[in-house]
Length: 343
Image (tube, rainbow, N blue to C red; front, side, top):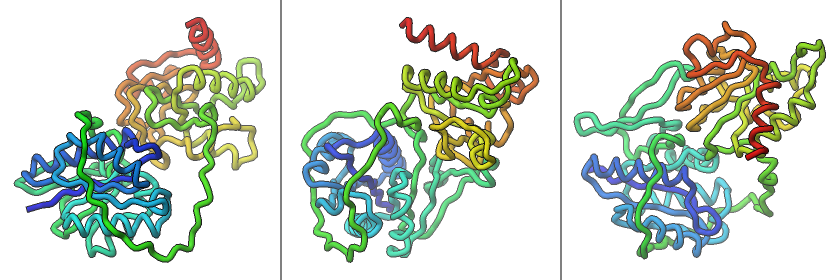
C-alpha cells in the first residue's frame, strides 16, 4: 500500500501559502483515492511550524512531522535537502508531493537521489488508473500532454500551481512530531532577505488578472514617434490600481538585448509562453501583442482571455481570445485608468 507524504516550507508567521494549500488539497485527494494514509511534513522555525500545523489540523492527516530550527527556516540547499530526506524516511513515504517552488525545485532532485527514488516536476494533473497513481505534464515546449506512472519508489512529485483548489477546512490543535536532524556542513550563510516594495513587485501569482504587454507598446505610434515613457506610466498605473500581475511577450523582453528602449520594469522573468511561464490567473488581458502561438501557449490555463490589438487579423482573432478589441491600446488603457480612478 502506498504511503503519501505532503512536504512544504512554512512561511514566516506560521502561514502556508495558497500554493502550498493547493498541493495539500491534492495530496489529501490522492490519499483518499488510493485508500491510504496521509502524513504532513513541515519545515521552518519552531513556532511557525506549530502554527501552520494547527491551521491545517482538519486536513485528515494521520501524522504531522516537522523539522524545525532557525537554520532550517531559510532557503539553503544543504538544510532543505537534509530536512526533506529526514521527513521522507521517517514517514516511510512511497509518494511525496511538494509545491513546485524554486526552493523545493533546488533541493528535491538531490533528495530523490539520496532516497534512490525518482522525481517528476511541473506536474499539472493526477489520476488513478487500475489502482495505479499517474501524473500529467507537458512535453515538447508545452505542445504535448503526457501521462505517466512509475514503479520505482519513493516517487517525488513537484506540482505546479493552479492544479488543485486550495484546501479549506477547520483549524485545530495538531500533535506535532519534531524530528532531530543534525545540521549538515554549512558553506552558505544567509544574512537576510531583500524584497522589492509591494508596489514594485510586478509578478503576482495570486492576482485575479494577468496583464500582458507586447512589443507594440514600444513601436512607433500613429504620430510616427515612440512613446515608451508614456507606455510605462499607463501600464504602471494600471498595475498599481488593479493589483494585476505583469506578463510580457518574448519579443518585448528581447528588445533590451537589441539596444532598443524598453519598459524599465520589464524583464525576462515576466515572459509568458513556451520559453517563459505558464500562469494560471482567472482572467488575462493581452495588449499590443499579436497572439502568436509561442506566446499564446503560455495562456492555456487562463480561464477568460481578452486582447486589445489594432490588427483585426492577428492571432488573437483566430479563436485564441474570448474577446478581441480592435483598438489602440494606448487609448483604451488611458480610458480604463481614468475609469478606475473614478472608482
